[in-house]
Amino acid sequence: MRRLYFLVPSVESARTINNELLLARVNEDHIHVLAREGTEMEDLPEATLAQKSDVIPALERGIAVGGVGGILAGIVAVTFPPAGLALGGGAILATGIAGVGLGSFVSTMIGVDVPNSQIKQFQDAIEAGQLLMMVDVPKARVEEIDELVKQHHPEAEIEGTEPTLPVFP
Image (tube, rainbow, N blue to C red; front, side):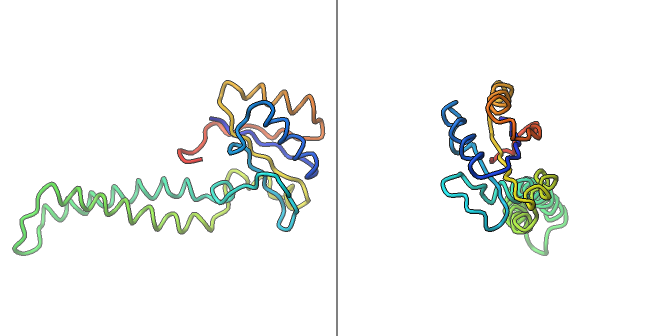
């Protein structure tokens, strides 16, 4: 999947593009609209926390760092066991799993408060009243959807494509 970015000047234009994308068989769950705070979006699919914040990349980093940290802690515990305890490979597994859980929890809590790094470049346009449409499509349909928007909506600014989507879009 690839994420396409379009800046549109109004809610009406976004609604028209949204309807055309639905007719082109783009799933409604793959269309996300981000607007300035207080903009009445009516029936447009508003961007969720996953699109607005860096929660998904933070979760991925937390799982990796927590897992490695937990495994290292398990290796240390097996190598230098506390007095009187005989620890085996299960301790490494248990600390690795605990590290993944703790790392994912802590990083997600941090990532919720960090704005999405991919949409930072659009922040000025959004604050000026434009709407950012993010459309997730299969790689094979990127050009088709770009052309659809270009042909019918010259007012829309096509801002590019994100190369790949996170694991949990």
